[in-house]
Image 1 (cartoon, rainbow, N blue to C red):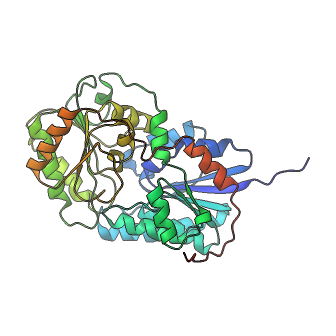
Image 2: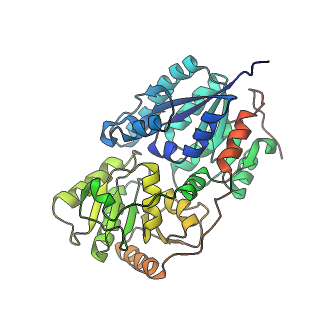
Image 3: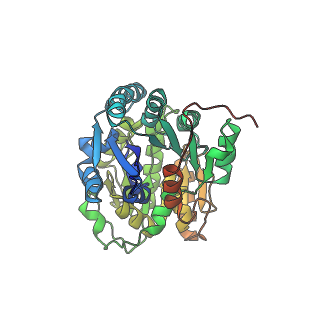
Length: 388
């Protein structure tokens, strides 16, 4: 019998969300007999402040971590963000040379992922990009488009994104609208959380999950200078409404240090009036989706409020510009960085209740289609600009 040569596919994970939102896709790749899946883990996943749980989760799901990258320069500002990208390029060059994969799969718009796409291109690897063509309101959009130009194949989440990727000179034959693996994963989670589940994590007031509550997720906008003030406006608005709230820590982009400081000062200096806010860093993927499904409203600027929440019809108050241009469902109410405006929007959304489920980002069998496309990919190393 003729032996089949396995295609070596490298998937770098530099953020907790990279694993959370690609679980089904990675599980399918791992089980394919024609694929040798290589995981390179680095970035915030390895930071001590986030604990060991994500590394343990990856291993407990049966995956092998082939390489680890300690590539983060902590500090939460623009200089450390740029230096982290540079260090990522140096560290990933060694890992990629050692692993020698056939294909490198890059997800989204993280600055570390741009460095990895650049390294893969210089080492003559086929680059596949997930979620190209989306538009947002930050530097992330520029990063996303730069990765698109380094990638050979594109797995996009919606029709408009596919059009934009082709508009950037990419071959239409190398663009597939497969839907969002994020939303597909969210739709698959059936886990239910007990009433006091969230009290096991983080710090702050007790939250009863059987009663109405808010989830707040507000991350830095790297092209804006006053992230702290913007977060404080949301924090004060939520506090004054006295609605039980689960507040997640901001991600590790430039601006996170000042936002984290604002949270600590508000909490530790006794400024919380309501006694109804619980702060935590993160949750494992299934736990987060199970929590999201029970929320009465999502407040902040996370893409979870745009994509996953649209599928569940959860009311969303989208604050500021971070998701400004992203395609959204009718469940999203946009508002500026003004405390009173945020309060009114939350009250309106809480009163409205659930919206009709949207399939803007959902397609069945997304992860299966992605795995089939990547494992069967046959394309030359040298890209060419495709003129319309």
